[in-house]
Length: 510
Image (cartoon, rainbow, N blue to C red; front, side, top):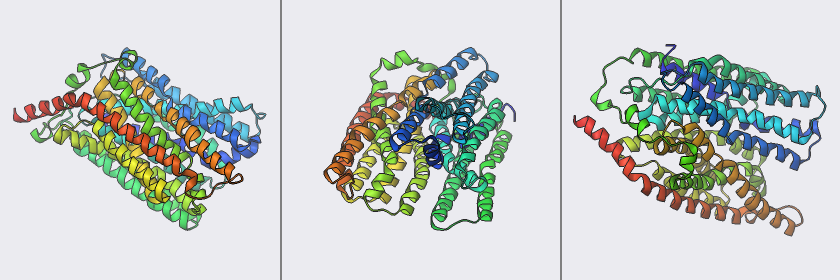
């Protein structure tokens, strides 16, 4: 089991389950604000550095590529790949621990810019964990890279809910202690498991059933967390209820180990014709291998980047402003908190579904994945129009949350297929910069400026559908433009995806 790609998958899943600490900012933000004497704008400035750190993963991509280059002839990256996790662990511990020291008064109140640096380091650690886990999944499951990426991105999406459940069980009402937990817990998990994660693309003919089992566990866990979140927003849980629900959650988190054992047992079985590999590693990974400068010189790179600015930017702007949006539409605090909490579940469904469904469609019909960016952005248009016309956040937030999440599994997978796997870590992290860039444009220049103008005209505050209506009409138009951009990308790459289907049919007929 030590050298198994299945054990590597389980280790990656567990690291992903603890890597989403940047999504838990709301738990300790009030304590950070009061302890440092910040006003709201200063706290928002610190939060911006959280978003930048969590989404600018160029350094993690470059480090991964260097590790891969130095160990190219080996079937296992071993200690070299561990450098990526170690770099993330050091930043995670340093960032959160220094913030904890500041809040507890152990060190004098740091300058705001220094606190921004602490927050950036803490959030930036996530990119190192995520890059290693996603790229290894693509290398280990070349035939089902969409499903592999969807599983990794899905568990990262669930990590916020998992970490908060642990917090509510152990440290409820103690956000300062939770900050210390964020410094220690993800760091120890990554250090303990990093030696088990490696690229080992062995026999791929029996991958699908076991990947489906991992997917089923992810869906069960998401459903379980959704039920817990709903009940916690309706009832007050006693301590024994938190202990019970968290214990069940831990059992679910540990359950992938049994799948890995079963998969390793069947690893040497002869391949079934019905499960013949779609893309042989030697075919898929050696046909196209482009580095970042070469990639940025192509039209396809900028089409994908522009599509992500439209989808990711408008989606992140929505979640960043959902509290203010709900208040202006007279939603209760309980309703707003429920929507914020459930966003992680919708985000998970999109991350997982985008990879799984696009894999299914590719294997059956040879359809290119960029077409799914078209579909999801077209659906986002509908979600934004629902919010803009009716103010219905229940339906709108679900649609936007699912479609936003799907981009995080589609984009890395498309990157590996169009530009190759060799420099995938650097390339997809560069494209991910579209998230904070788009968020700034749509949060500050669209939602923020339009809301401030409406509020100023009404004496400093704004209530009603008109406060955000124009913003969401603009978002709908932006995603409509994103549909056209991704459609062009699909048309430019359809011949490549068609050749994948032809190779599969030849193998089946042979």
